[in-house]
Image 1: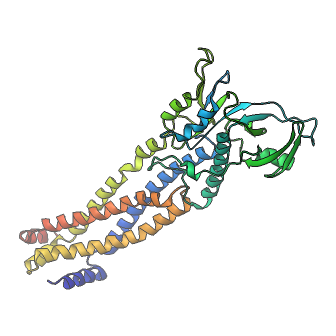
Image 2 (image 1 turned 45 degrees about the horizontal axis):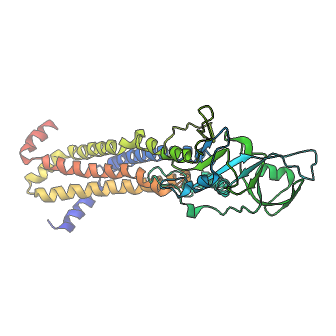
Image 3 (image 1 turned 120 degrees about the vertical axis):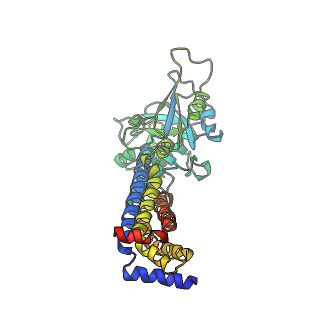
Amino acid sequence: MRLSSIVSEAVRNITSGASRTIIWFLALAVASTLFGGFEALTIIGQESTAAARIESAADVTTIVSPVSAIDGAVCDRLTEAQGGPSASGAMRESEQITPRSTPGRSIGSYEVTAGMIRLLALSSVSSASAAANAGHGSPSSSFPASSGQTSSSANQPAADASGIWVSTALAHDFGWAKGSLLETDHGDIPVAGVFDWPNDGRDTRFVYALIVPVSSSAKPFAECWAKQWPQTEALDLLLNETAISGVADANTLPGVTQLNKSHDRRYSADSLYETRMTRVLPVAALAVGVVIGIAAVRRRRLEYAGALHCGQRKGAQLLTALCEMLITSGAAIAVTLPLLAALCWRLSPSDPAVVFLAAARSPATMLSGALVATALAVLAVRESRLFRLFKAR
């Protein structure tokens, strides 16, 4: 038989209902949508958890020295190390500053390095991006579970260290904004920037304080902060390198901790992604496809054996059955994939394309399993079993 005749025969079997196309189409469409949707929702849930951690600065690790023995210059240069953080900076507590507009109300201040200003600016951008992406699923770098890459310093937002920085809460209460001139008992100080520092479990000292940029080599600092996603064990070693040797004793050694202690520091996005329960769904989908392929042929064994008895070649019969299953499963996949794409684009807070590719594996393996099982089941049908099948019917 010519290929055109084989395809024509397959189409006639489908349109006439001989191949029970509707049954297998619904089975494949429903199963592939459920498998793919479960995978997508699982990954989206992990993305949302990662985005929440980044938004709340849980990706910032700090080293605290009780005797202020942190080298600020070394802390700022941690971003240059291989596998280092995307931003790092040092800080120490400074004196109270009193605005002239509120002479009876002093505000605490912290002296920081230029790297800390970059970290604050980057954290503010991460928070704004996470909040915006939660609504419409635009791509962002909040869940690099599959890539394992840290953010490049080239992509950091500009951080102006020519003046003080204030939190949004402080700016709101005093009516300050970027470019404002703050008149204080220490002189007139320009406001170089405003950063977001919500009360979400992170260290609250910056919520209501003035952040004053200073030279990183003037004197030692009390803490070094480093922002890294995904976080690695090497970061703790890098932070320990910022401690000035010979200053602290056994009772005042610097300690490494997490800026936001409301999140588990042992969290690993890579590990959660690699060990997720849904990673075996493509295998389960393959098994479902095999079952559907075998069932589709098994219901028509008498028809296939009779066709062989009437002179149909095995090769033509095999191609006809494969064409029917390809059309049926292809139509099911054509329905499933747009649904999965819409789900990923609407809900993913990070990269919808990556989530979609992961979710599409189950429909793809189901299609493969159905085609392979159909081929093997058709090959197993023999003309010699015609009368036995007829009798059993």
